[in-house]
Length: 379
Image 1: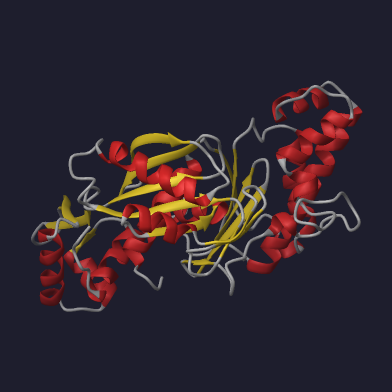
Image 2: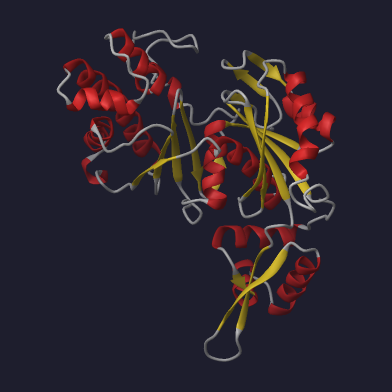
């Protein structure tokens, strides 16, 4: 993507990204510009292929044409380093997946950079203009990413510490590359393209083998001073409890993650491989299964209640990859949330639960690059 976007043009992109298609009059009001100035901005962005005419509004006076981001004005590649093989997707500015590929997961960052570079031409061949309009590569991983989104500070899963993966990938591909923690990548995807598009303050809790969390505050991804905001997985929930991979004891991850639930189930002699099977055991009256789900659900609900107390978000979105939240585990999570928030806040924060597929992290990674394209270098 060779077009240079001015600060005024980027303001317009932000407004449309937040609100959806807007008429020129609505754009002028949103940015505080005259209609003449706005018409010039819109015309330039249409000529660049970044905006397109969407639909026509009929009312009093002359019909008004809404403008929207052109989905094929820029393309983004997303790579998830949470699975083996590692999924790699090509997406457009609507968040749609155009093509998919896979690369072998490696703990050697140089090998990963080579694999991304080698897979890129085939992925880009899925769309006739993707190669010339590729605007960025995003990589999602489990671990801590620094505030520049260039370096992996630490990843237990990959056994990395202070790895400049973004620069390695950029050097191999020639494309600007951004790293992000997996939960933050999912939150950005929800803000740009998902159910939280119009919500200024929300938190995402990602439940899988580990537990991730991320926050948008005042419409911006909150990363903290060092990129570590949202790490509820390693908040102490049971002081002196089981050892955690982070080196501490009693972290939320050791009690409420899917990995922890399955490990507790195996310790009780169950041959359970999914949450649904553990739920079935509990519904049949198995006291050990009931105890495990109560312990895990109470811990996760308490952690989410603390998020509500601290941030007072407009939404908590819980994403999960297994089973259903309609059983005992989900019931206990919701009960624990309501029990542990101040009475005046009970029931005030919407809790949405959504099962997600295996594309979520790669799509989130691509959204990190799209987020940078829309908001610029200092979002």
